[in-house]
Image (cartoon, rainbow, N blue to C red; front, top):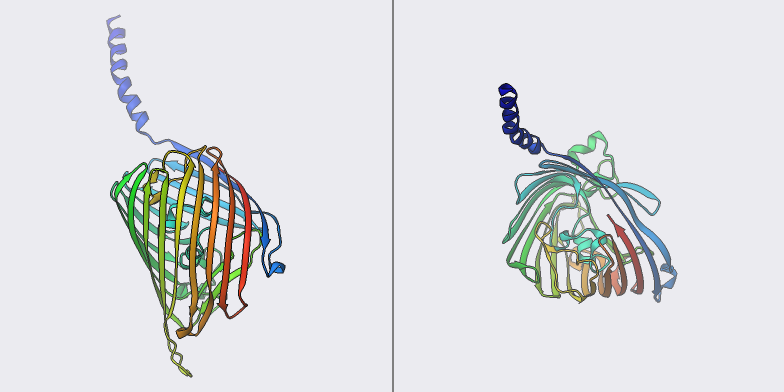
Length: 391
């Protein structure tokens, strides 16, 4: 009897230890992800033949997120315009509560637009300047540190086409690469009160623009008009005989209660090699752009902050938002004999955050392009609507 009591007492004493050991073992978690965008658009334009009214599903994705202790991973497969392709595909290791390492194919941080994915832009479509001077997903490694006062990232990556083009063995030594960094300070950062300034810089070597087996000596900068129902090129510049590229972008974010201001300026320079036989000297190519966005909650108390994104978080369910935006971009540099075009864009967007998974958007934009070497001036008045589901 005494032995039984002693054994029971020992088991009771050991139970917390065993439970603690069991609790310390990380759980393996799997979560499905997905999104569906349903767009409709009506256009008014002097070049109406280029812009057909209609509806489209510009993005449909299915994926999965996995987490085990400090390790996590994500894989996302997208279907758009009758094409299937990989989107995000990466592994992540959380060094601590403030920092992590991410390896794979994803969008590396560069400027304020890094805070949101392509379908979560408050302007419905991202500013043209960001579409031109930033990059899509790139294979690489990124380190990020974020706390209550500042954020810092550093990335080493391959050229964007490395995510979609299978390079032949003799091309691996010629594949373009680059590095970039984003530094952000937010001395005031609390719900409804944010003051943030930041600076991002980047460097890249020439890329394979024409899917050539031998040529990695160019850069291409291109964007469509800001609508996904009609896909029409707005500005487009290809810079050959490239040596390397340097770029930078300062950013500003101010928020007080239900009102916020976001602004960013982009500068880029492509240094060029002189050909063996040249009629004239090839000058460096320079491109510039800027946008300014004013956001206001018509229904809702205040914006919240996303520490690791370095920007405002998605408004709460039930909030109604009005967003006004102006963007100017130029890809024309007469000194470099490159005429990619200039663009002005003014837009207004109303976003209704229906619930945690659904957002409805109404959008109007006036876009004007001129100074291109592939088309005359073009003007578009676009009236668009979107219903999106994201989980």
